[in-house]
Amino acid sequence: MTFEIDYTLIKKACNLLHQSDVVAMPTETVYGLAADATTDQAIVKIYEMKNRPSFNPLIAHFPDIEAAKKYVHFSKTAELLAKHFWGLDYHRPLTLVLPRLENTNLSHLATAGLDTVAVRVPAHPIALELLRQFRKPLAAPSANRSNHISPTTAEHVRMSFGENAPFILDGGACQIGLESTILDMTQDQPVLLRPGGATVEEIEDVLKLPVLRHNDPSATIKAPGMLKRHYAPSLPLRLNVVKPLHGEAFLGFGHAENAILNLSPSSNLSEAASNLFSMLRDLDNPKFNGIAVMPIPHEGLGLAINDRLSRAATKS
Image (cartoon, rainbow, N blue to C red):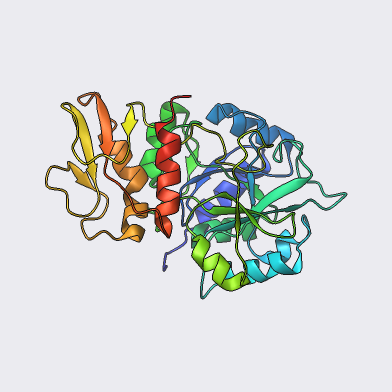
């Protein structure tokens, strides 16, 4: 991705972050509500602005793997994944949950008091430059109110927060449009906590071993995106619909004659992922009484798309 960086705006964002304020920054996945991950006061602002439960931990963002190593312990397997997926030539959005190093100044509020930290390196040039200039990790959940649809443009951030919107570094539309995959790397075998932009198939191909699936709803929430209801529009959502009911907005995939919007007319899962949150926002309109979504293949990026849709459709 080529993008011209305005260093004056980066400096302004850094000044706000040093004052324990928050800024919205673009990433390749969604826009993040960024704050100093080492300062409790800054983390409190994130929770307050998002109305986010304090037991829901945040992802710490770093400019590179060496910066992350100052805060968490990388096993050989974790380092293999990080070097593969966080590289400049080949990058996929992957978050690793790793053991926290002792005597680090990372805010315990950011990690919800856990002895693990969810870490990742984003792929957007503006986010990377902000991290390099700020020289401290940034906690950055999606820049929207908790449980609502994630923002993939600067305008989505403004719409979500209204007159309380933070300073926004506008980096255009997010390239991937779907949050990162999250792996728990604290056990001998990786456990998938949240499917996302890095597919399970890609991860297993690198590791040469299977990734376990997290399937215990009573387990401790170790990472973002594990709440039953998340990413939700205000209208009720029905999934795997072939024919919508009267008054429903129909979101298509592949061949869909009656769809109001189509995630991907060519059935391309990458295209569907990048359009998902934006199109859900467009259809979340009171002129409809609900949103009906066509079936999405449960493979590759479809796993992550179906995860977001099922959480959005959950009533509580």
